Image 1 (cartoon, rainbow, N blue to C red):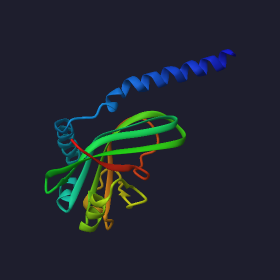
Image 2 (spheres, rainbow, N blue to C red):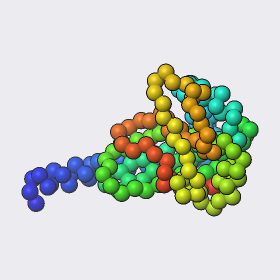
Image 3 (cartoon, one colour):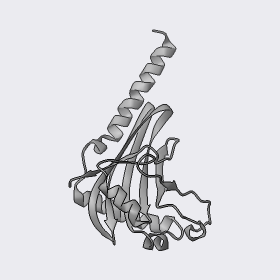
Length: 186
C-alpha cells in the first residue's frame, strides 16, 4: 500500500472513530424528561434567535420540536433526533426523526428543527400516519431570511413550516426533505 493510500485510510479511520465517539450519546434514547428539557430550551432559543418567532408560534395549531438533530457522514450519511409534539403548549406525543443520504458529504453537525403546523388538516394528516415522510406525505416550507428580517414580513401560506437553527459543526445540506418522523413511546 502506498503512503498516500495509507494516509487516506488512516485519516478516514480517525475521522470515523471521532464521529462515532462524539455522537455515541445519540445511540441511547433520551427519556421523556430529557426531551422535555431540550424542547423547552429549543423554544426559548427560537423565540430569541428568530425575530417575530413568538408571535408566529401563536398562530400554530401544533409545534413539533427536535432540540438536537445530529447529522454525520462521509459519502454515506445519516441523521437522528428525538422531540415532542406540542398542542396548545402541552406535549401530546414524542417523535423521532431519521434520514439517510448518499453523495458528496463529509462532516458532522448538530441542529435544532421546529415544524409548525398551521392548519388542522396538516396536523391530522401527520398524527394519522404510522411514519410520516417529509416531501412524500407532506411538503414543508423551510423558511430562510436575512439578517434584520422579521418573520412577520414573510408571507407564509404553507400548511407546514419548518425552521432549522442553532447549527453547530461543519456540514453542508440543511434540509428536511426525505426525513421520516415516527411516533415513539416515552
